[in-house]
Length: 199
Image (tube, rainbow, N blue to C red; front, top):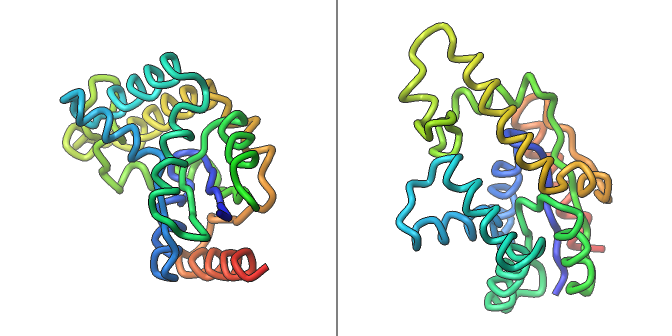
C-alpha cells in the first residue's frame, strides 16, 4: 500500500486538501475521526477539550503510535493500493507510516497563523472551541470574536506541538502553500497528488 500523509497546523487547509483527494477518487482516512469515534464510544461531546483528552488518553494507554495504528488498520480494510491519511501529528506517527508502507510521502499544508485564525473563527466546527468546550460560533457574538479564535488556535497548537507536530512537519517531503485563493490551493493540491500517485 502506498500512503500519502497530510500534515499541518490547525486551520491550514488539510480538510480542503482531503476533499480534493476524494474528488479525484482517492480514499481518505482522517486520523481525527479515530479520536472522534472513540469520544462517541465514551459518550463524550466532540468539543476540542474532550477530543484533546481522548487523544492524550489513547496515546498514554497504547503509545505514541496508538492513533496511527488504528488508522493503518482502517486503511488496510479498504483494500486500496493508494490511501491519503489526513492529520499526522507526531514524528512517531510519520516513522510508523514510513515503516508500514511500500511508499510513504508526507505533504505539509502550510498557512500563516493570521490566516488560520480567521478560518477557525468562521468555520464553526465543534472542536473549534474554547476552554469550556462551547463552539466559538455559538458563544462569541461580540467584537472579541477574533481574539477568541486566536486563543482557541493557540490552545490547539500548544497541545499538538506537545504531541510532536513541529518535529513531524520537519519530516515533510513536500509543502503546499495555502495563504492565497482557495481555487489556487485546490489546483496545487490536485497537481501534487497527480504527481505523487503517478510516480
